Image 1 (cartoon, rainbow, N blue to C red):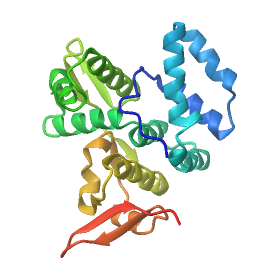
Image 2 (image 1 turned 60 degrees about the vertical axis):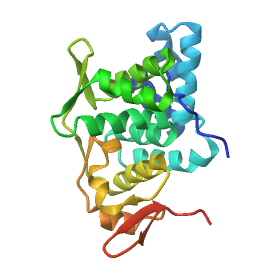
Image 3 (image 1 turned 135 degrees about the horizontal axis):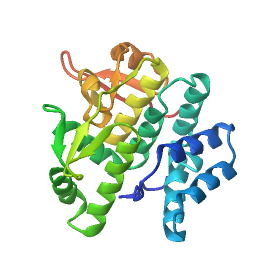
Length: 239
């Protein structure tokens, strides 16, 4: 099993680029379609290579332990073309890149009460985890910019503040369970079932389904009791 990248998500990823990569994996677009989009963006050689690397890890060539997860995301996309495509990219990014997930978690926590937070606070907390260096600052900005491009947040006051936008309603049961699985994968440990509705890392989405029922009936998640009234959700071990 390959090791998850420590940062990795180091480029701004346009929503259309990610969606085209998803469509390529779904067999409804060609590599040439993505190349045309990157050509139109006018990226330099180095930037294009790094962008391609992120798109590869997201959809085109996910790590071996995430290939099945990616394929299930593709199946959701093909079965329900009206499903919010940004939710699929979000789940894949959270499961693939801990750095992306950490930024999402921080924004979710810091904006929970008033709906916005200071960019400086996000950067400070990211530096505590990933080190106080230029790369951490720049890559955090790349993630925030991507999340803005995916419709999750808006940057205001010349980027000094981040506002969370109205959450996207997710009504599809399979997509909901898939997103919960992303949160569990990101956490790297079981999650308390009562916390699923308010997971900070999934802040852009309003999960409207009965989550207890969904996870209890999932082929990929398992619920177990730990003490009176405390149930945990974890990944089902592959047989």
